[in-house]
Image (cartoon, rainbow, N blue to C red; front, side, top):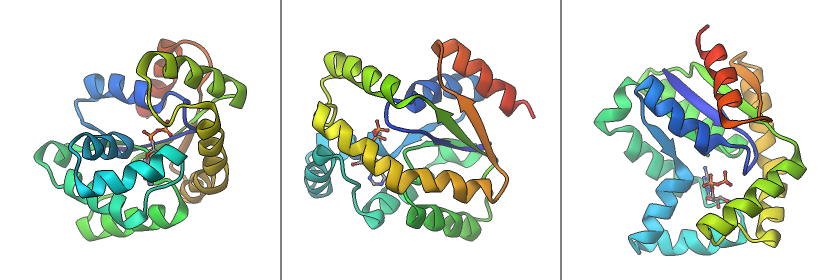
Length: 187
Ligand code: ADP
């Protein structure tokens, strides 16, 4: 099964993806995590990406697509995957469609997790206290939400045209949201 998770920063994509990994037996591929690994490894790519991420802007489409292609070619991704953080704009959505066409793959589900913007801000503030991510400061979060609204929200419409979007209410407990996702995946 190949799934794309869509939703604002703080909507719970990463949390839900980790639970799905256990239940579906397919890997969670997060472009944010791939970029943070590149930063931790102090690679040239990581250093360049860090500056952009710390502002809350998007890293270049080519860089992210390159990383993603490499990750998708690994053995564990052959039986499917949960993609989180990609595509983040319409250019990336088209790049992904092209890549899938080349590989003869199709996307089964685009799950759009919908959360109230105030709730998102509160969740990220809480996460900032625990994880200390350098892009979770108030000003950067505001920019990330703006980038989401302008560039990422249209991606949901792109997949709606393909009739593969399911809207998931992101309010409630982690278990509540997981149950809603499972109900969608059962069909
Ligand atoms: P969140 O969903 O909370 O914003 P992520 O870990 O998905 O967190 O992303 C963190 C940052 O990594 C983004 O703000 C952006 O700078 C960069 N990033 C992640 N995925 C992409 C992508 N597909 N294209 C460009 N930049 C990306």
